[in-house]
Image (cartoon, rainbow, N blue to C red; front, top):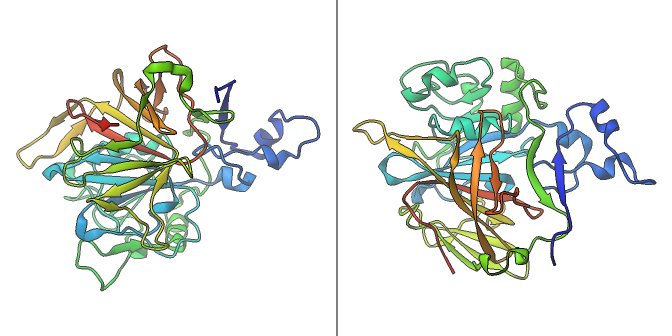
Length: 348
């Protein structure tokens, strides 16, 4: 089915903003509140809730992660040692009793996180984060020194460790712990209108099969990221019964330890990005702000070439087709691989 028009999702920051949304005659106000992450119907209260962006490992010994199936947006980006890390953007975190395990952050995750105005949850970091993580607009909860070699450890007391794994793979946090730390630190639990950008993804009305692109939309029932992430060999298999891409890691289904669910996404994006190695330890840097690079968008078993642009930290990353039009995502969760330019995605 071809797309007829796009639906631009708005996050509603105040009750007044909610009342100002134009609704079809006879429809209740609450019916038209749509998630900025997935375009699914949610309550007005949920639309105001500030998400968390939590750092989770891809190490084989650290699997499975807990709470990761709640990620509406899941980023995967390479780190030093040729091992990637994940950042899970979760909006319905309040009732989760075990989130993690939680690992350290890197400087280049911060621009990806800030476009969602989250509370950043991590267990330390590296010195290259020092100047940014310390600024007052960044609300973070860290289990140890926030940039590794120094800084504060805001909210460190709410983390807990389990005995089933060895450190550093056994540090967790709970929704109630995040709420407690936010209260102690004076962090808002609702989106901050002075920072938050209400325009993010554009979602299709109906189903976007990509057939409107003709032969430019290639078959993509299998997506192989093993060249981009050779350690995890992250990959996706399209399930036509659900219309979702099921994710694997280390050659097996990637599941949530809390519920056994395999991670599945309506949309998969590969975002080729300029990068460099900063030192002999192998720490990396990515050029998150750019308007000259390309990538791919996959949905419903097909894929198209795209370009992307991000102009400021709190501005969303916007993806365009080769006609210069913003791509239209399907309703549901989105996975984003921020790939090192020069490494290729394979699909068939």
